[in-house]
Image (cartoon, rainbow, N blue to C red):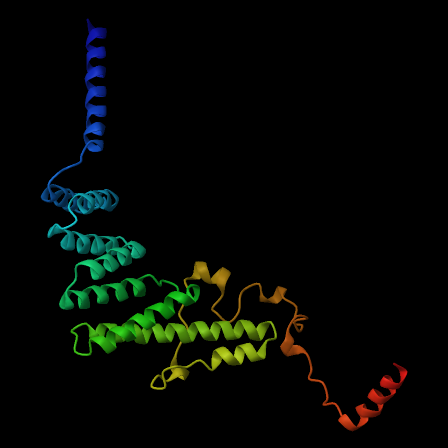
Length: 260
């Protein structure tokens, strides 16, 4: 009798388990408000991956639903909260392209710049992303000079310019160490904003556990292992040849022609 109860309990548990899974898999052809509610609940529970799946169902089954714009913005903000900035930018691009009016576009573009800015915990690692963020920030300032977000975007742009300057200085120091003075001079000459006092720009402080391997941007702990010699592949280390005297070279050319 006791064994029979165990079998019944096991059977009921398996039915509930697979029945619940089947219920999730068989959800389709639901009204838009149903999928919207599922998105809200999943975001509230912290499960943004499941919210993305429900959003896909809402978008595919109800392409013209008025709930889509709000759901798109909710997911963009949710992914930003969980520091998933690439997905944030994806949903913001979708929102700007499909749903936003002029006022809503301004806010969405501000969030997109913020996502790029927050995706740069270490400016010395992503030169391309810094450049993209600066371009987006300057474009926003031109398009929305009276925006309430203008001071924030301007502050982010200033920080990005300083990060770019520090990155260029780090690259120039690297070229100095491998004996490429022309390349180093090129990066030190890139100072696009004359209103910034570049002599007051300080390097970003790296955490101690990362500084052991990366250094402070000017040198590393293993610098003593690198021999202090000129690079054999550097074109800048080759001494310039003396100019050729055409008057002295002309008799030699005549002799060569006579031999031929």
